[in-house]
Length: 506
Image 1 (cartoon, one colour):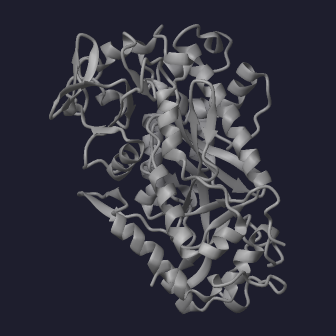
Image 2: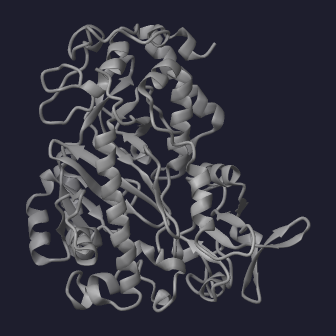
Image 3: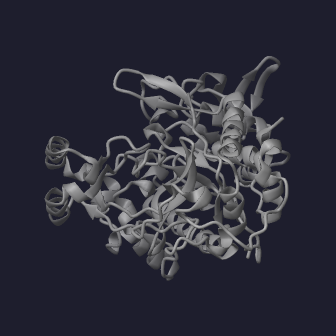
């Protein structure tokens, strides 16, 4: 039997006339902390309206029921081989990503706010990318410092003047969104090769099996169409006489996200290829197959710019395809996302995104930015050095939670070493306040306890439409008191249930 058949709280729709309260009954170990927005409870410990049905069910579950539920969803991840790579001091290891069995819930209105903000943001970022590789108006007008853009390691001079199909530089975007008492805000944009959508889909499958009745009772919006929409988005980027042939270009099975590359290729019916599987002849890209060469029209690349083409970029790359950029420049193949998009998700450029929205769209940002101090400026560096013990400091091109300093969780010696790095290369760092990230209920070590969360929604921008999966990869800092949600830093994931209009349980 599956865990859901044993779990008594999912056998019938629970009565919510006497919902659970934090700190009592089944929530005896759950503490509501006024410093943090709690996704499940109000400050007085009563369940929020959106959470009453789920919370009541959980409060009545036995520890054995919850343990079986957690074991069931974790077992599915193990059987599916849903892994990520942790890079240690001496070696990298492959691990099963931890999944938590308690979903996070958002109302239709909350999701609509996020959805509108993400559409606005991606529209402005695509316009910004077109501008910096063509007219450069935003640089001349002082919206963004020219040296910040032109000196960014992700800026590709090879893209200057190149006509990108439909001016869509970013077709696939994963933007990290957090919530505090002040509301939702964007923590960072991921515009190069954003990962995690396979975990989002796997979480949903596991939870639908674990909570079949509660899932139906909540009337959750579906996300299963993502692979179909991804293919439609990629196919819309060019003009084709017939059905375009799409390939997912992967660095190979040793890449931390290889599971996702294989999963998406399989779901889309696309070719899963490595650089050695492709060849460019007369400006056309072909895949080597057992029956001969087959033309490739669209490449969904999961390889960084530097390694795409050893002729144009890094000559020592063994992951790319010689001549690929020439074929791209000639318009014979579409690459998504376009090379050079990384300049727009640089953590220093991030600080200017609200101004870019105002400049290109003449609108106020719907989603706020996090206060950001640029160490490249004298004032930003001085402020950061003076306040290291209470700031988060990040490398402008960093990812995965590596290379960060979380001031309140650091030692004096660690701060001293980091300060030396800041003074040596200030342009490489930004700092932000330690956010009071919202907390959601998790089942940890046999107890229901709060943990900090964020969410990475996935946005698809095609020729004429933008589609956002109504959900996202909800990441969890599973360590008690931890703030870093990245799986590579001990984080996990949970399902995000976005309810349809009017579906807020009383």
